[in-house]
Length: 345
Image (cartoon, rainbow, N blue to C red; front, side):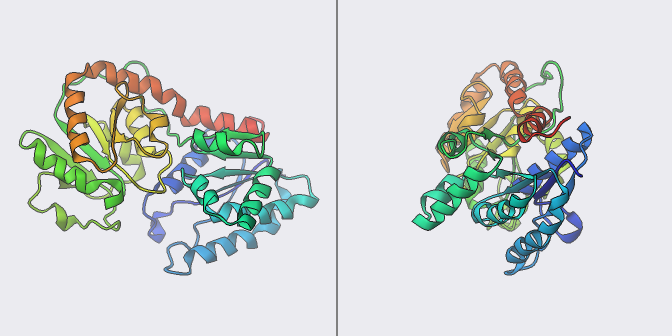
């Protein structure tokens, strides 16, 4: 019997998948399981998502069609968000009711509490029943843990996490007036405010933007601007690229924001972030220590934060980034996850 089967979104570049938060987080978990030496099976909940209109429903059906294979698994761990937690999670719980398998649920992002709040009475009942009957429940933000723990005492924090890149002290380097954004190039992520920031900073500063442009802001919008669009990074290029800059910019107001992995990747290479006081970001960044918090979508606040950075001891901020990163070390978080679902290492 396999000790663990995971259901979650795989990232497959050969089918045209674009790097995004949920698949990257799930792939990071699988990489850590490989590193630790845990045997596991995987059911891809993203299998058909590349198909327009029908992709997500087909992917959900694919997961449920594979449910009959799960009777040979001691632990089933479903990694999803929103309606899928109640729908697929509920089906999984019913399927394993007659055997000895245990189902754990890992809820991506920071929007599940809002999904619960706007649900009708019956939908809330379904969500509560599924969460209460799971062996363990994991949320990406501590605020959601605090709210839903009343339903199930085995409710834990499982933040977005990344592998450790640097050991020891933060590297020393001179301030180069270089700033970077990595993510969906969209208005919700604050990219237009970043473009405006670059204009106000003027000559002598470099502001670079990386990421897919299918979020509403085309590459042509950077033409003639000081901010430069640099294309899309592969997931394994992100940390090394950010390491060449002085700070990450993330003035996001995205409604589905949870624990942005890019902020954690920046910390892993001793780079502070200037990011919104929004969603789970204040749970990551200690303002003035490992980064700076700003109002979402405010160019004025972005500019003020750049000036704050320039007045600080940059070597101390970089070291504080590495110190803070220990909370988000994927190896340590994966070990905690395995312990809490009852998989022996």
